[in-house]
Image (cartoon, rainbow, N blue to C red; front, side, top):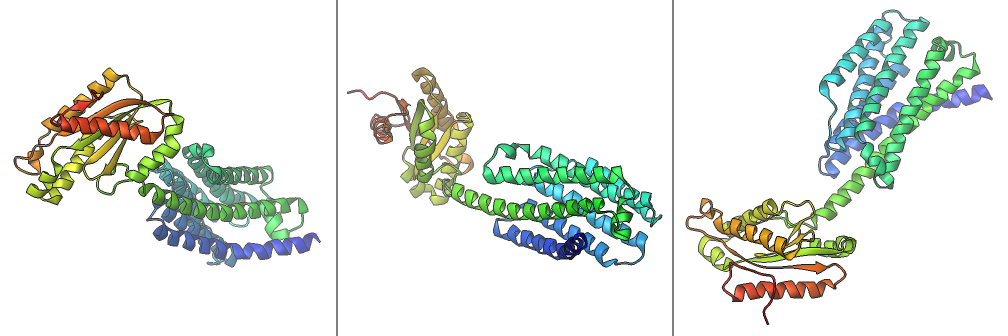
Length: 393
């Protein structure tokens, strides 16, 4: 029965190089699907490297042991480096290159030296131990760099869990090797001691975790593509400010989390004349500069700039008292009035009218919108280039 199970495990082992290669190709193709995410390229290179390394060892190509050890070692080191860089690249990070290449060179030298003394327990132990150790270090560094995802959504948590199990399986295998360096000879050559078949099982667990990791990465890439696509729908293509869909998202998801908030609605004075006199490209430039000025002057992390359409904007701010809100609004109005728009069109000057107020988040937003819109209209009726916080009856 034990021999039968071993035969099955060996048969399954032969399928891993091809399966891992196919997953590498799939990750590479997904790179083009999700908008050229760099981490997918790193991971695809890692999987191809691992597939080649396993294939060289199983097929004994080349038959010269030192050369086989060297070539397969290069493949496994490629896998170790790129799998770690791919993991951290998912979070927009990169591992320290000096540390990485120092570890790679050290591991490669040790593996090459072990290949010069084939068919000895110690050389086999060093050869395998060097690869497992470097992979363990790289995965540990990568996991530490993406630890934030442990507190992410369910898919991100499972993804981190698989990497953690990966690290644990490597530690387990290193413990087996350290306990009995002659294990590799007994297991792969003499095949006598059933106790060492647990090492075989650990090897299968490792490869299965690799495949699960690749599937989860594909799902994560697709999920992020969907998320990014949905987020892009919330933003104005010209300015990068939120659009009306972004406003609706704020009303549905962010507003219920607030108690009170401040609001500014502003409109560019006589913007139609800017378009008619200078042309629409200049008008677009004015709008982009205006959004930049708003973001620069309202530099709170909790602020949201929303383009309602054309030349009309809304700025959602944290709750300020009326005096503070008026001061901030006046700074913004003056910054726009004093900005040198002549850099895009000679003689061009731009001013804005504003309605401002502080509101209770439990108030129906349609009522809030009506009130702030009336304040803006009052500012325009009173001669423009001014701020209205209270409507005089």
